[in-house]
Image 1 (cartoon, rainbow, N blue to C red):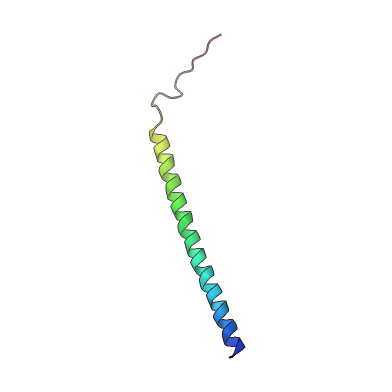
Image 2 (tube, helix red, strand yellow):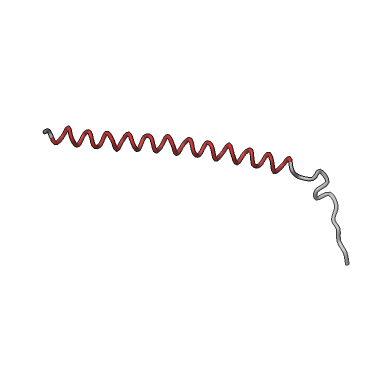
Length: 59
């Protein structure tokens, strides 16, 4: 058994795992960004139209 080919196979597996992990992380970040944008749109749409136009102050 050639040790260098065994080491190459092990390092190739690690590189593949790393590449898959990086791709998965990118997809998760994209999903989170999309969910945050939807949440902000929903929050903006839920605001009362007269919110902040008057103040109720008692002295």
